Length: 350
Ligand code: NAD
Ligand code: TYD
Image 1 (cartoon, protein in one colour):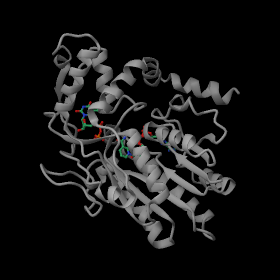
Image 2: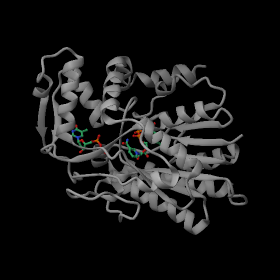
Image 3: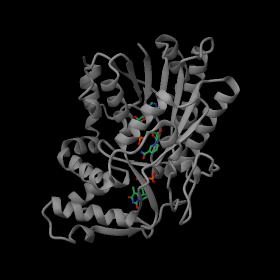
């Protein structure tokens, strides 16, 4: 029986990883540690919250004493670290929060893992989940590989780059059994509606303006979140310590093309006349330091560990739009802070 800590498991990607591991590995004990910031929502895990191999702990990775005590008490065999401040726009308005959670929080986890595994590192693993944004921006051509030099531009990507370096430094200096992956933009269910795809689905449905940054010419490489979770499963179990793996969908979209496609799909699904939703497109001031293009070469992961994305984008986007249309209550709750009440009802007053 293995005991695995997943941090940030109440967030968008984390909740998919927790669900996959709880369902696929009944012999593992899965502990989800999350601070439940605005982005963390226990309603994301309702379907598995009563499973015997799952436990939730509310806590802050920035609190070093708490983290050390937790590791000493629980003696985890593995860590899958997803907890982070994750939104570029928020990192522009409040960079310091990103240093605390993404950098110091990660170092606290590394210190605790190093401490409890010092006598027996064999069979243990610290897996740090990161982003392709650490590589900076591409021009019209080329792909990010694992050898691309780091060149972050936003406070978010700078904080993630820093945390990646710390993970590698702990591997190289202290022999910590650690692995890193860098993934492209994810889409799918349970994403907080501040990121492009869920925000725009929500705004189209509510006939609100669609704020396109700059000219909408920036390019992102979109991967279905459940394919990211499957990649995390493969890398956690089969990846090599000290290695980095890039994860991506080979699925590049210019923002404006993707937005037009979402408008078309939603016109159809909402019974609107073709062209209605596109009228909501509003060009606004560009994001400061806005990276032009991200695109991932994931051939190392495909070649060495046999992972391939399972879902085509056309199908994934339809599924995702359907999910947000069918889960109006979830959307209303996360945007109103209702989920804080959910937490109290579930755990505090029990
Ligand atoms: P998210 O914002 O949806 O979730 C982050 C989770 O971390 C939330 O549940 C939040 O409550 C928790 N958290 C934040 N600060 C914490 C703290 N101090 N202590 C404990 N928990 C805390 O983020 P996401 O989109 O699911 O991203 C998860 C990870 O994957 C991040 O590390 C992010 O950098 C990385 N990533 C995201 C994407 C993407 O497209 N979303 C792509 C590549 C990599
Ligand atoms: P986002 O979902 O914030 O992901 P990231 O910045 O981490 O790639 O944004 C995706 C793209 O969409 C990015 O180029 C910025 C753009 N964007 C808009 O044009 N308008 C918006 O309101 C948002 C949130 C993003």
